[in-house]
Length: 397
Image (cartoon, rainbow, N blue to C red; front, side):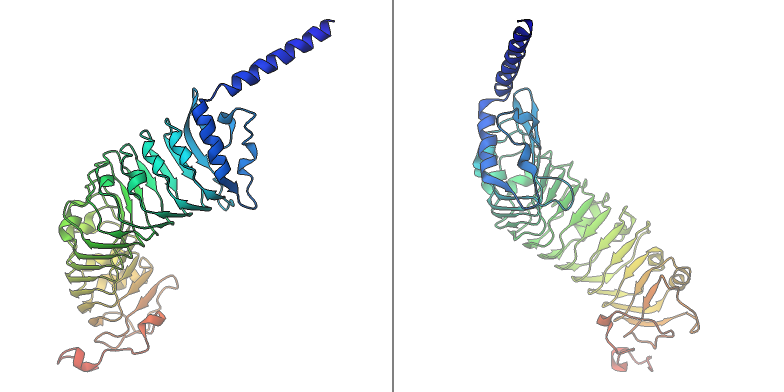
């Protein structure tokens, strides 16, 4: 009899526990999670949803995090690199998770638009749904989410323009919208906490104003768009930059000398229409500078000899290559020195010198006969020197 009473007591405790578990989560959040689950599935090789058994406490599901009876974070999909990801669409019921602070979905095959109901998540601070197939525009879903700190919707199929209201989000730290089909201009950003802005590989147009970005910016990537106009007044202000990529646009004008005093490790300015003389005020340790395929002119500053990878090819540089370049090259401090397709007239290097195997030098198609034979990239062509009529009366070939 005692054993029977003990068994009944255990069953009663189990029943009470199950009932309390079912009552643990807010019913609205419970139903929202059910709708989200029905709209998404594991891709072959993924078992993310194996723990989503609604007879148990949803707060113990993979990727679900709760405080009290509310869901505060929803991280959908296996976050391990190479995981298969999810397929389906994001159900509008996600907007019912009123306490949600964080929403992320790992790379997969999520299709469709962002639900308009996202605009109801007033507490949302972190939104990351990259490398999926999200389409449509951002206006209805994001324009009201003023507490967002990170937005990562990169590598999707988004269209339309960047909502101007996003630029007014005062808490925004990171905006990553690269590799989409966004068009129109770039709105000004006013968040003094914005540190990373990545809009590369879109279809953005227009020019940049002096106050387009706050001085807090540390990483700025606008590569592969259709942006135009000068950037010198803007860049002068951004003295915290450690990464800058403006390549493959139609920017014009000069580059301010103080840019090279910023803590930049990688500077990409290639394939624009920049002009003028590159005259650094000073030079911090920069790993890579690419100013190729522009219209820069004048002599090359000796300060650039401290750069490990330097691409200055396809410009209008003139004069002698500074001796400091040869010193750095022979010491293997310069790994890449591309000076081809300019109007340079000489370099003081011993024709019998052996360039270190770890270094690469190209001098083809200048107003001089290269004193040393080196292997150049295929894009340098086969001609060793420029025609004499392009190099002035002093050039004899």
